[in-house]
Picture 1 (cartoon, rainbow, N blue to C red):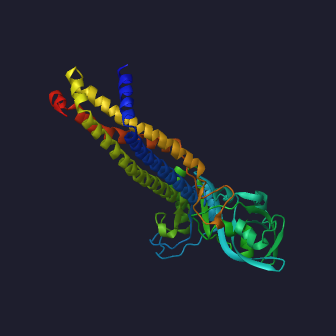
Picture 2 (picture 1 turned 90 degrees about the horizontal axis):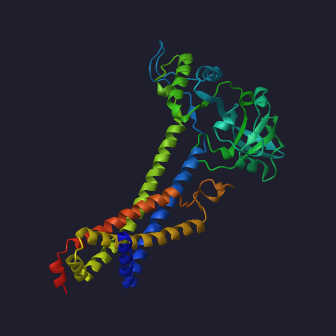
Picture 3 (picture 1 turned 30 degrees about the horizontal axis):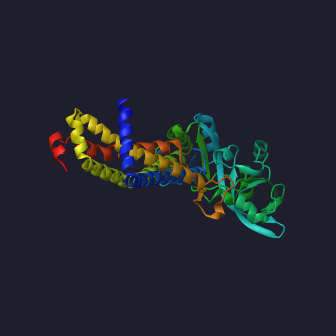
Length: 418
């Protein structure tokens, strides 16, 4: 009952100065809208960057042949390493924490259809590569395991590669000449935003069986090894184990990182996610500062209210009100102003996030059907929770000093006030 009376008195006090209270609430609402929109934008931007970066592969590691920098096994430093296909087989057989592993080689080939010849960067790949590298088929199908084993002349094209080759006409089922050999186009990849890559974006690539690639190129040595651990948390152990296998076969020190340079997408993904969190925190802090300006308005109106109601405070203390009663009353008045304005701000910001369409982060050239890479202003539960916590801190902070000042007034001095 005591709290209900305090809330009633606070509400009556606010209604007594409607214009002043409304303007103060408007400042709080504006601050909350800033916090929610900036947090939602930061979350959407961070999510878009993480998605675009992660589209290169699902927790994969890519190792290239390098050059030794340490002496080992009687071999001199500075010796070039050249992978063999047996290295991939050994990794597959000896490292159980690696789920998938594939040889990969890359080169440019001329693709001819009719009178049109288009040079496409072509990757020779193995079974499991498509799953590791997130090669999602939009039309047709992927290369099947039997086709890898049989060295079939089949090809999967990236979305842009298919457009360059067939100028918008259906590609699946068509035959193209590659280095004088006829290849059947069995699939076209879904267009994707790809912010991390090696040897170019997947949209512009052609993918053929690894053994078929070797027959075209006349080179049996893999250009790189791509593998995926059974769990992303095991990426460092998987890399170390793979290096041990390759080092044993090629007689170099397994700790010699320059002999097998690596791109660890798990590690780079963690860095990108940390950047996204930092960006969201920065934007949230900027929004909190804007909301703090509204909090200054609340403090100002409450200080004015204390000055105007000094005699009332003195009278209440004279008839038995304790300092904590006065403090709680004025603190509740500040919180009522803050949370009514905050409620209006939350509702307004939620409506804005619904109305504002996805914001394109990349150019129209990279536009995808499923809006990959677009920034969605999503007023999620986390955003609302963080905004509410900031709002509560602002309300308590801005109301506490005026409430404390009111509670410390001496009854006799307050009653003498004109």
